[in-house]
Image (cartoon, rainbow, N blue to C red):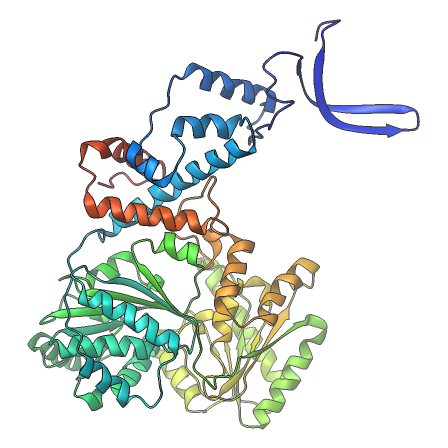
Length: 579
């Protein structure tokens, strides 16, 4: 500072008695560059020994030194989408002349983030322009299938089935994500698609992540399809070698129309005569290579999940898939009544459990979540075992068993079969029951230390009760009764809408933690926001699909700058080769 120099200062101003104080944050000479005062001011994340004023000056001078920043998007595309030039966007995002210019710059840079993300998803999935099966969908076949059901499809099921059948009739390979809450009737819709495939003399496969779930699907599909002459077979890892050989032979000869199984479906011994439709349930529980192993021969692909995924996340994580949603429950299904308790009222939960067990009902108790690592898996086993002992003391007249992740698959299956057969009253379990467990006699779930779970996971767990048609209950016991925790858990207490719950979970926890573990392939967004930028995401996804449909490997001269930028961004997140 020089004596007599006029400066502009900014900071917090306070008055104490007669003393006036200004805690200076920034200052600059009047009439100079004025980067920190008198304008919309950029605020940067700073490293050590770095000031906002220094970084602003550095960015300003860097931008001044550049002539025009080259734009990777073709001019025709920018004009069509009414997007600002990259040069304008980068200058205005740092030093905007006004709010309108800042909004234009943000829109362009967010669009770029989502466009390059969608291009990566489409290109790495290899599903940008594949030719698939072409099925004939006959009205009489649909009438036969729908007429054989003991219920009528809901309006949402009919809408989703129409979307799936339109895909099956087109020459492009179907790649569709079917979302629907537990009990919304996804299996009936999948059965209709598998029936159409069978009527076209093509085979169908349904792959589930666990043997329990595979057996449930096998039973349901047998009930729907066997009376219509469709031969359904089960293939799991626990079957004896001789049984498996017989199934392999029937699959290869075409004697089997639909095969239901676990990862046993993707062993090299399994050779389909002609696989036309692959249905993958709870797809995120399989590895990428496991999923691809089922897709040899380019069958149409239907992915199902009962995990409600917010639309924005579905469009990015599953950018290569079209999204269908069953957003309506069958008539007569009663919503699970949910109650939130603190540790002080915990005994009330077990008093209620005692009453229901006395009436002949069964109960799930979920042990607190412990993040998985080798040491912590043992801690989770210990926590579940100790909780089971405590529950046995709280409910002395009840028969209590424990289920945890260290048990072998056949042990888990045998225990769940005993629970389904009402051999005991209370199952104390870790989150291994989260997906696909169907126990009609269970109508109460108690979740201990509920604050350790994400909202979407709590909703999934809650869906395990009430499968027998009677009123079901879920009690959340909060170990932490802080205001913030209780406010979050009240979302579950007040709403049974899985998509609303998932949206709130996304807002509270962010995309990386939505399922408890960070999803690979979804980078941290610098400007884009998955909770508020759905329109931009949809526009970017539609643009990415259109670009690749016209130029699958971006070889056209006008796409070379786009391709270079895509490679640079891919390398920034560790993807060496994209195209």
